[in-house]
Each structure stands twice: as C-alpha cells, then as structure tokens.
Amino acid sequence: MHSFVNKPGDSIARSLAGMAACYPHLLRVNYDPDYVQRVQPGRPGKVVVITGSGSGHEPLPTGYVGVGMLDAACPGPIFTSPTPDQLLAATYAVDQGAGVLYIVKNYAGAVFNSEICTEELGREGITARRVLVHDDVAIPEISNRRGLGAAPLVIRIAGAAAEEGRSLEQVVSVSQRAEDNARSMGFATNIETLPRSIHAQPLDEHTVELGVGIHGEPGVEQRVEGVEEIVERLMQPIVDDLPFLSGDQVLLLVSGLGGTPPLELFLFFQQIHEYLEKQGIHVVRCLVGNFLTSLGRGGCTVTLMRLDKELLGLWDAPVHTPALHW
Image (cartoon, rainbow, N blue to C red; front, side, top):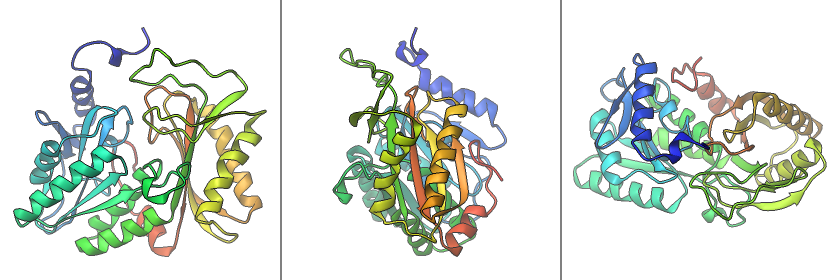
C-alpha cells in the first residue's frame, strides 16, 4: 500500500475531521462546501485573509488558519483548486465588513476561481482584492511563474498586517511587497507523487530533478555529486533573479516536499546558510520543516524573502496556528 489517499473513500473529509479534533481551540471545519475557519473570529472591522489550495500540500492551506494568519482556508481535491462556492462560503462566514484579501498561488484554476469570487462579491458590495504569488524562478517568464514556497510567507505578512487593524489597501500593499521580494526553486530526489503515473520511473541515486513544481510538474534531470553541488545549482538562480545583494537581510525557508527527513533538511539548510553568508546575504529569520509539501515526494523547496524593517516586524508579530506559533 503506497498511500491511504490512493484508496476509494472520503479521505480528505476524514483528514479535516481529524484536524478539527486535534485543534478544537484554533479552528472549526465546515463541510459541503468544505472550508476551515478560525474559532476565535477577527474583530469587527478587520480585513479578512483567505486562501485556497488543492489538498496534498499540507500544512497549506488549513494549517495556517488562526490568529496572525488566515481567517479561513479552502482545501480542494488532491492537487486541485477549491471551487468558487467554497471560497464564497468561507468569505461569508468570516467577513467583518472591512474587505477581503485572497492570497492566490499562480495556477490557472486558482486564478480563475478567485477572479469569479471577487467579481461576485463586488456585485454584493463586498470589496475583495487578490495578491498573486508567483515566486518560482524555474519559469523564465515572470507572469507565468508558479506559486511555490513564498505562499505561506505572504500569508503570514498579510495576516499580521490585518491583525494590526490596517486597511484593506494597506494589507494588500505590504503583502504585495512581500511577494515582490520573494524567490523560490525546488528539487526532487524521486518522482513518486499523487496522482500516480504508470510511466513514472525512479531517479537514480546520482540524479535530482531541479525546478520541479508541487503538483508533479517535471523539472530538469541533472546528475550531481553531493549536497554542495545541489545547493549551488539551486541557489544561484534564486539569488540572481531578484537579485539578492550583499548586505541584504533575508528570511530563509527550507520546506520539505513530504518525503525528506528533518536530518536531511537541516543538512541542506546548513549548506545554504553558508552559501548565502559567503555572498554577504544575512539570514536573520528562518524556517526548516514541512511548510508546503507535495504529498510524499522527496526533495525540498527553498525560498528567500528580502526583509525590511516593516516586513521583519510583521513576521515577528504574534501568530497562533497549527503550523506556526510564537
């Protein structure tokens, strides 16, 4: 048995029920349509922050529901965007009268469905805005870039700004600046993902796939001779793209795709940290673990976000969700 998700049944609904039972003090799960909302609602007049994502990327999106991050999150089927009905139901449930911000990873279904919602809400007199996350430097054309590891970081900044009581335009502005200053890239050590392909062949022990997406989108297979070489090929495109410069202060996220143990993630983090320090780029905040996954795939994504005083202050503000809390 490769995965319980491969078996017929209501695995996603049962997983949501398990999450609700585990975190009853933080979130409540609603079904048909499915969405997760904060148990402790935002105060009246607060901007609400909402996102949706296909299941299989946990803790995104549901693990980021709570104080200082999301007011609600909508999980779709495996690797499939949630429907407009889900997003609208979640919005009506948490709306506090100050407007809505959708954080949207740049995939066609997510973009299209969120656009439908913003238009419908506009007709109802509810102001809704979007921030698109497209941080994957493996795609040359910026407008076509996929949302990757920056998604939870942008959600965090948006949630903190909304929690402070900022206006919708202010929350949009600072969230967009966070997105503009983030770049990511991923690599995989195997190609076993769901939905499974009968044509999938395992990579040999000296080959990785650079530039993979989080839905099984292929990267470029390259032979490598160790961690140092992987880090070099992964980090140089990230650093060059913004570009990140000597003296920059950054947040570094190393997120496993679900199949890489913490021992190896910290091994990569240490090598990346040394690489950045040699270039004069200072890691002042960091996360290592599974923060945006691809079911059980081996490998990780790496995200850098350039920080200024305001972004750093928002990052450090109190947060209490299943996945992040300080």
